[in-house]
Image (cartoon, rainbow, N blue to C red; front, side):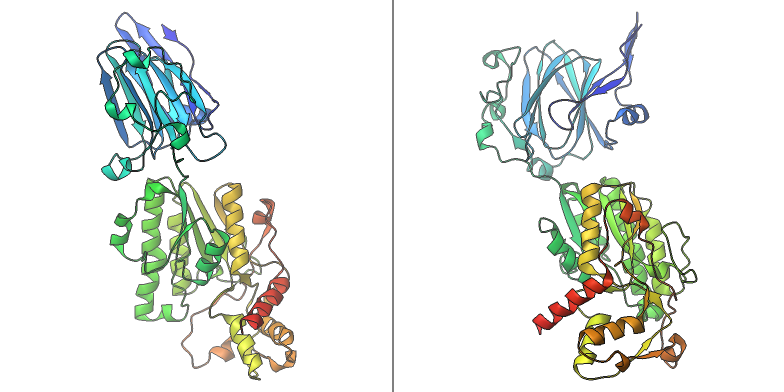
Length: 468
């Protein structure tokens, strides 16, 4: 005999789901699939990645436990007996304080998202209450629990057995009322490489995020990863990278580039996968050889130099993370030393530079790049690779330098165009892609329209002038 069909129902608490289980029985007893990843995720249960299975045995009727909100997701059910379950949303937000109750029998399970408080009362002797959780219990984790009182009149939970007659621990009897509960905050966003040009822009664009520079977290230090409680985070944005393109061609530079752009990225990818984090990783036009005039997200990588090779290798590691946004960009300009700031300084001093005129691409200003990343995280379009640069015409470096000079009140003719071969003669330089223009169609389809480079350039130079 088989009872019921597998199904999943929503509740008044966002993310709290009731699962109707199939129970197969005969004269010997019954059998059920308590957790079946493929079937349940197809029906809408989050693929929450359980790592620990706990069972609480209760010999008598009326044992009442809770109400505890824990910093992980869990799937609860009964292995034997019956229980009355009550859940209270203790997450910050509009649903804070919402109550849902469900009777749990072998044919019922409940998925409880992080921050929703869980409790139950046994209705039969020898009830075994089972729960799968997606983080390991630890004393440190327990310190972040949030509690509310079982008898809070504001919750008005209809306990089948009056609490005066129930078996309750002293701790559970003395938890605070809802009015005194501090809501459990959501998992946070972490920005790594926060002291760099992009990191500073991300810190401005995401004021609620934690922002760590190399002094707080060195991505190349293997021991640093064990010091972080990753379960407290939802998203990690990796803005840390080795970007010295020419120095990467030297023996020490090659080692440093691989350490930061590949080995460290591999560790982040592993952490993100294990803890179900969204990993945002920023890559470069240097993963292409530049023979094509435009590059879209599906073009195979073909790096020329060591820097590009390390970025391409890092990309391959990032794509193993189930939840990832790989953001390729080009010619980044932000708060710190960069091409535009250098040209503006030369213009102010009356210098007439020679600038390469046979490499083509588009500038990307860090505030625009940060805005695009925020857009991806807010809208959560399909995970994968997105190109993000400034919009507008493709230019050479010499074109951009002439624009800077003109905006600084100097003649465009002060900039002398020169070929890459001529400019690099006698210098130790890395090979560079001739064409670095990235297609913006995919990110535009998500609703983000990058700002034209010319507009961003005027605003950037105006800010430089004010800073001076």
